Length: 329
Image (cartoon, rainbow, N blue to C red; front, side, top):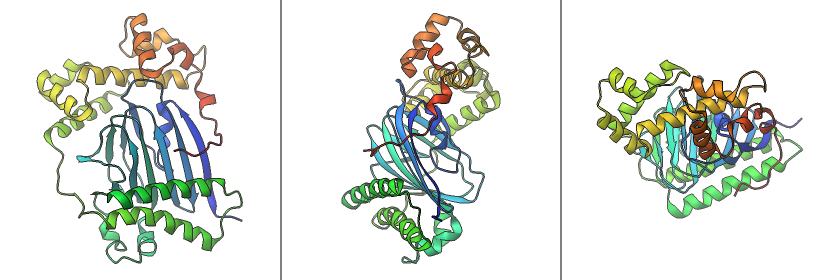
């Protein structure tokens, strides 16, 4: 028997598909850019080790609270606009280290592509054994940002995509020896960028704008799916609208009112996406999310997602069907 636990590839048609952006790890996502999200998501699993590659065509906000002891190492493969993780601004082929049990957040301001590997920290010594520093598990216990060398970074990025394509088309499984080879080949792509970079940029703390955004999002999490008005946030956090506006513009490139509307639209999309026809109505969902004019809600919704609310209602199941896809790039 081959050792693949998973080989799958799917086309994305909605931001909900990115909840599984990294195989084995749930990611909370919110669409920031306008338009119907399109993209691809591919996973290859070798034992407890996985490689995920994803692409998407609109801006996204991603958050993850780890519930396991897995290490995640990611690489930015493509980006048309700014990409930031924690307080780090990412450039093409940069490597990001997300240690076990550490909360992570990122903002993709436009179409992007990424690769991410996820594995147990106990495998570090064997997979990175050729380099003493990288083979030390303590090296990976702190978040890190490694700036990629331009030339070697581009090579590593292309190699990861080719490896994914090859493994995805392999229908015979892997023997233990070939499984180990491919895991090391994948890890080597990440390690090459780490070793060619400057020391990790791990001295920057979250600036005040991001700290304020974190407080806002904690308040929104506590509110659940109910709509939250900007004035409620200002009162609860004791900040002025001007301060709040500056923070949102710095982090997201959007004002807080627009951000909150996008969040309510995303919540409405998820509810409609998961609901069976006849179980609810577009008007009811719009009202629950604070949209009192159905016509205006429909305009916002279509501008955001490229489809009418009635098209989303009950249409979620077919979009999740797995289907083979070609090369991502």
